[in-house]
Length: 175
Picture 1 (tube, rainbow, N blue to C red):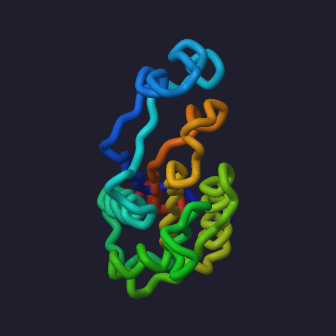
Picture 2 (cartoon, helix red, strand yellow):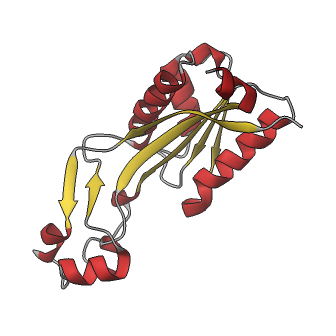
């Protein structure tokens, strides 16, 4: 049976770095309290970008890493619960910006499990022979929804994107 694997990966990490010490300035918290409970030392905020921007930049890097052209992509799966707007979907926006004219596009809304669901979905499409190249992107801009006055949630969430190209394992061995 054919097996799928990741050929290339990319990411987009926003420039604004928010450390635990930054949060101490306006929240009843401390670096020690956050680190011991979550392991988090800093998070990134995408003030200058939308969800689709981060997804696009991560996708470009994944395609470059995989040495795959946008027109070779058959399907774009974007896992997000923080789209720019209700429609068009983030996947469609990325498809347009990449000029991935041969790709279907679909968003997956599954919160924390979204990227894993995207990879599992891509795996099924690849292993059944339906598609040869699937671009999976996990992206969130959670800072637009997080209550920055609530230390229980403000310390947990940030923004960013990760992407990978899923192909048949045979292609990875040839790579």
